[in-house]
Image (cartoon, rainbow, N blue to C red; front, top):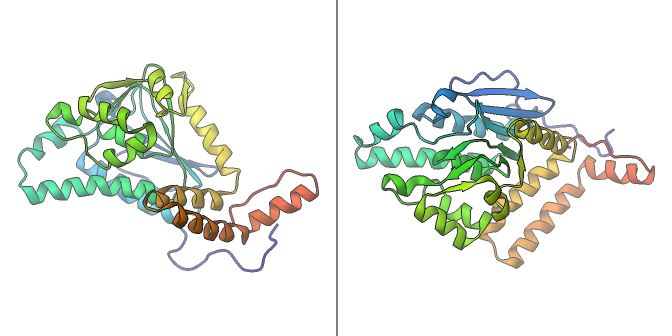
Length: 284
């Protein structure tokens, strides 16, 4: 039921469906508003290649106008999440690039993180086994992380002679687990076990290996059943307020909440409360 005047967005280019999207370098499916993205090179613990980075970046950009996707689950095939950049397909070629070429690559990987943070859908990472390097950054860039006790998360850039400041790690990780703990992981590159990851706040929940993906999808489905326009606003505020003072954040939230109060979902919730019914949100 619509309570407010006005038609849904129908301008060309404003909305698109991704249910039929067929990627080349990973798996992707959409079911009842939940998109599941599966890194699919299990024989190598699901490493990333140059082309996979670029395709992931482009997909998350496209999700910004996806009408049929309201939440995203990202996982890995087999018993691992992602082992990071492929040693043969990425690390080796990087040793032969000049500085402009290297900067082009590092900016591309950073653009993937920017696209994940900018897309309005909540992203839930379902993590089992190895979650290392760029794979750890994919998990970190997600909004919610479900893991397993046997999972091992490592920001192992220092292990290959690089700084820990890769793809936004020095900005994102301290905000999730705190400055001191982030510094330890980024300096040492050591693995963070699943139970420790939950204690430190990196994992929202520890599941069994058999259920971690299903549990993440169930959580995603619950978000899809909620006020998805408002969820997108929450994600935007969580992102934007990092760079605001408290007064600016309070004003930004006043504007954001006023926008949400002008949605049909807000009116649906009110009328359902009056009727002593459960609101049926539609994301508009």
